[in-house]
Image (cartoon, rainbow, N blue to C red):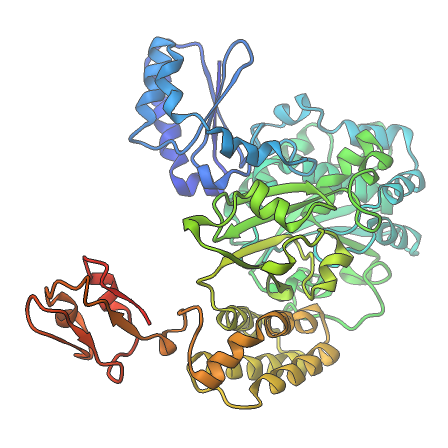
Length: 584
């Protein structure tokens, strides 16, 4: 029997470490033929902590939402062998569909192997693709296979991977560098973190194959310091790979040599842009360079360099093992293979989703994600993080590929998918993302440094009921200027949340400006409260707690709120025990 406890960041945050400690102590004190180990995130973040029990006959019992209180059921099972003891903890059929309806390539081993044991990775077929490449393929043949696959960069831009590799390969110079961009900074995105935490050797193998393709002598993983578990496991994996001879001199006797190291970034969003990342790697402040020259010609230390993100490299070993044509057979004409999404927000089943390109937003949000929680209506989904845009409910059947998503005003991005329901204010959502990009601007170019602040100021006024006629047109004018004048992708895409919310939810902007109302009842300055006289018992609690004395009424008689005095703090609604207070 094998027992695996999911210890990705999501599992640990939910208490998986405590569950593991209880199981470890019990097994140490009792003679039970069971092997206990950790694994990474399987992607079912909404059910963490997860404990997988593999019975001797190969049957898998997946136990979910395990905590210190109900872990006793597992101990009873270990003591008696009675399967019924853990029946209540088994994953429900409707929740298991979350994984069953996915096609996993980049995530194929996540949550199944121990990320801290290279032996698990090798047993699951790991490093066979590297061996195949080094013993039977030239760099040119390798690049051609990647070209056949149609693999595009999964970091956001969707640029053909083979083209970048080939450009670096053909650039003159004896010293070349391969860099992995693991500086995942989008709010709501956690795909790269999960891959590194759960299957670090898959990233290493993909990078080594890429390094062989371009002729790089050194590979660097640029990962944000806010990912301590990912850094810890990747560092351990690199040491293990070096001990096994997969990293270093004369790898597998092929004559190919490559070293690998980690650079922990300080968490600047702009360092997701490849030239800003290079500046940071060199010890400078992370600010984008003018292009050309492109990194393939002059990158890290002005040497030919190639940069791809984690998910891009995570697909490489599968492509080599199964052939580029097999990868290209999935997806659409212009978007091949699968894509990983971090599904989060007002969704029933949030977590990591990997599907073939060509599926629709409806497939992900409703078929896999289970739809909107709390019985509310789906309103929109933010694709691509601060660089992306809001796609409204009426476009729920949009096909997931680069061109179709771009046509909506959003982008594929790195894979963040934030779901919103009817209670979300779209003006507030645009303000949230502009606040992020304005703070993360490196300040190098005026359009981004000043323009994003002016956008944020206008949005802030609107959400506070101080919007005025012409604000919408001014926002649109500023957005166009910023997109046209900004130096790098951060500034060029920062206006997208504003433009898409105006495009699809203009009526909400008009309600904020003209009627001084927030249709979603979310903006505090525009929210007023009312008391239902049928439900009010006259307990006076709301009146006693109101900070502005806006509530009046006699004991045991319905109370009233003076809307002129009400500041919309919501205290009355939070303290009412009879559900008599609601937003007006």
